Image (cartoon, rainbow, N blue to C red):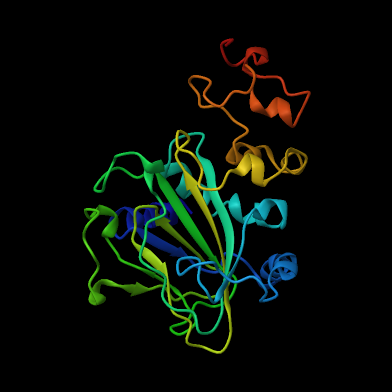
Length: 270
């Protein structure tokens, strides 16, 4: 496992991405799809070319599909996130994208926008994204397209057609990539939709793309693991206390019995 993690990290640092094959089995995939079904009826397509006029999106996933938690904190992905991002990193976005036949290619973009800070590329990485294939990603059904190495490019460099790589992978696999990497959803020229889910993570000092503490109500957040709660924003940046609420740790909002670091014998009082 350690060798696999090292190889995947090398691929991300050089090419900007890696693919973990066969992470989910059919039962796990079907469980997620069953929770998505009420929201994927072909009734609410994207509002613009970026969202996809022939694509459905589900936002606030942890408020709608509890099985998503297992993907967001999957043990095959966490070692990569832990190595690439600072401690106390956050879940920046978590959405499902169902690309229907007739969809056109998305504009190339990056997920790591540095929170609007005046830090143009090339610059350090502030985010990592994942895309979980819930259907096979094929050459014709809208598979994600990436531009290897583009995480190191200046912001104004456009990819040439020969530099674009289509990520083909079986359902149950996950694409992990540097948030600075140029990528897009491909055109779906097939006869069936292509479903995926994309949890995205960011450095703890950045604002999340999706306002997680509002998207996932406190009563819902309280049902998840401590790690998921931390990813949502129920944490503070240590050392220090950025993220506090009314002078106390935000976990007090979802767990009245939470006792912070000043009660812990292994840490100095704060």
